[in-house]
Image (cartoon, rainbow, N blue to C red; front, side, top):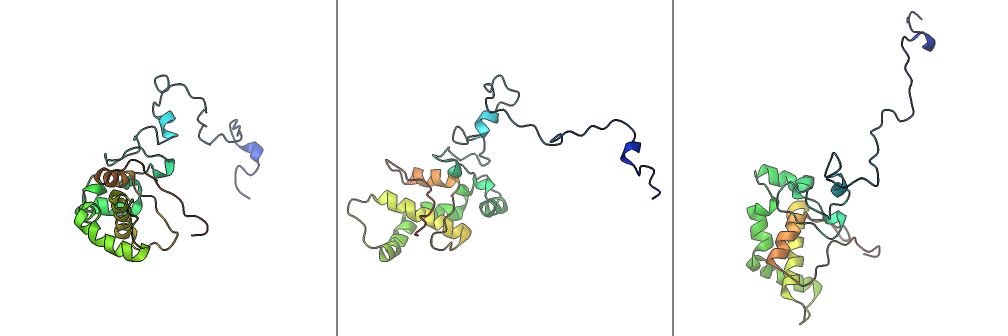
Length: 181
């Protein structure tokens, strides 16, 4: 072997390799307040529910769970449509406005919903039904048919805009399917 450093002892200089020396440092769990830290967002980045620093479209609101705190710009399928239409937020897209917020469109879809799900309870607020249909129409537009038990978290801006159009006293939020679904 003609390599001039055939033996490790012949390597010039003192190189001391320590375990994990090339790994990024771990953030401390008990970091000081954002005023005292070099990076003021570190505490907030651990829990997206505190604020909307993660929102790139400018229309998101903090949601109840971390899974729901996602912006339309963070979801590949949604972001593709948003960017190809040169929009700040998917909620500004005319297809979203026409199909998810238009009461007349949702009213027509309500008849199909009633045929599949059965008659509505007399006490069921129509805004809750319209909200449910609007969420389903958004999913259909972006991901097409998902199949039974296959659910997607919707961007916070979409959920917020639909809730603004069809308000309620309480909201369920995203739920993973039951194993029996």
